[in-house]
Length: 145
Length: 274
Ligand code: HEM
Ligand code: HEM
Image 1 (tube, rainbow over the protein chains, first blue to last red):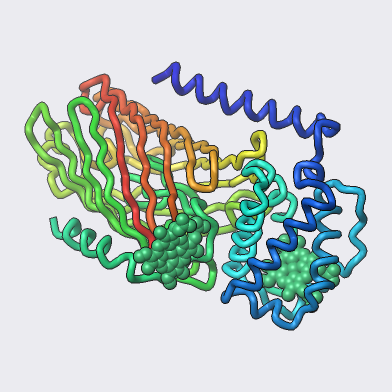
Image 2 (cartoon, rainbow over the protein chains, first blue to last red):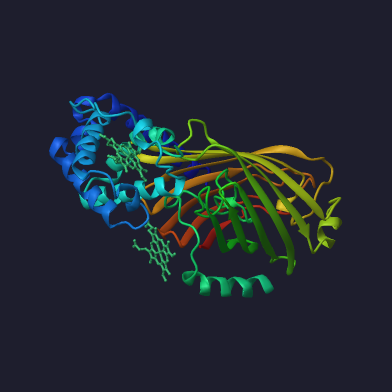
């Protein structure tokens, strides 16, 4: 058992090292490229919108929004935060989501729908996690406002 | 055992009930052997169940651990109130094969989330918990030198999930510091030659997919009875097919129990959430 524990620690340790080296070697492919660049992100956002529209729990938030405006803004934002060649110029996260009173459960539901959309677009589990890691820090700017 | 009968009812009606699913799959962890939300042997900072801050959730579990000369059966239940408070109850039944006796203990637990969110806060999630333990079969404990048949553990736990941290996989760690005088969790009573002290417990896990986590745990324990009571370790794999059920299997190394060494074996646990 001692050896097995050591082995596991070593695996985790070496995996964390390789994790670092892949993020350093940006030329191998940034998150933007892993998401399929502009086309991939557009397809993902379209799938995501379909999921939002089908969902009874969170659709009410979007009922009055303009789909084309949201689509454009969200694609741009995702391209920006994934390291793509875009600059998001829309309103900031706080301003957009103020007045919506989004609670934790609805936020998590939206994350689940994004994961569903990523699965439908065959985005790998590891790439999914990397995109979620970029979005997670924005939660405090989005909920309970 | 009445709680077993209660739980089999719960598992039966479970699919017809449903309160909360505000959290992301697998993030509440599983049920540890003293009934708190956690890994297999360590209570974690996460509260059991999928309740977010506007919801309540309930869960129930049964676990068995079989090592060379001993086996532990536990069933229990938890309530999660608004992702702030976890209340738990567990009944442990511990079979000592060499003596052909069974030790029994009830554990009442409470856990309070002090700060943070496993995924979203900058700092880890912190929780403060207690486990009040009542040993129902105290004769052996007293014969071995234990001082009490009741005791309360107090612990502080910190936990964090790092999204995509290890080559794109989510990495979760938990560190718990427990103030305790329990001998073998309380099954051999409380206290002895030494008084209560603080012991570290550590867990680390990787989520291989949305549904599968693998990990390791380590738990240091007191040796109040001078029986070489050793630290515990396990390696686990947990499967979360959906938000209502999860299955955990683990390889356990409990080393020396009641002076008998080489206590390795397997652990299985089934939980239901609703
Ligand atoms: C980290 C998570 C989130 C990010 C990064 C995000 C980002 C954005 C972006 C970039 C837009 C487009 C704004 C524009 O260009 O004008 C937008 C709009 C919107 N978001 Fe979010 N959002 C997040 C979470 C949520 C959640 C959880 C909800 C609801 C439950 C939500 C509801 C909305 C709505 C309703 C709009 C449309 C506003 C309108 O056009 O009237 N968002 N969001
Ligand atoms: C209010 C009631 C319920 C709610 C809110 C609910 C919610 C959910 C959610 C959110 C998931 C997706 C989990 C995930 O994979 O991320 C899920 C999956 C699932 N639920 Fe429920 N559920 C409810 C009732 C039930 C009942 C009554 C049953 C069965 C008798 C059931 C069986 C399942 C199964 C089998 C899955 C996995 C489906 C899959 O492969 O994705 N659920 N549920």
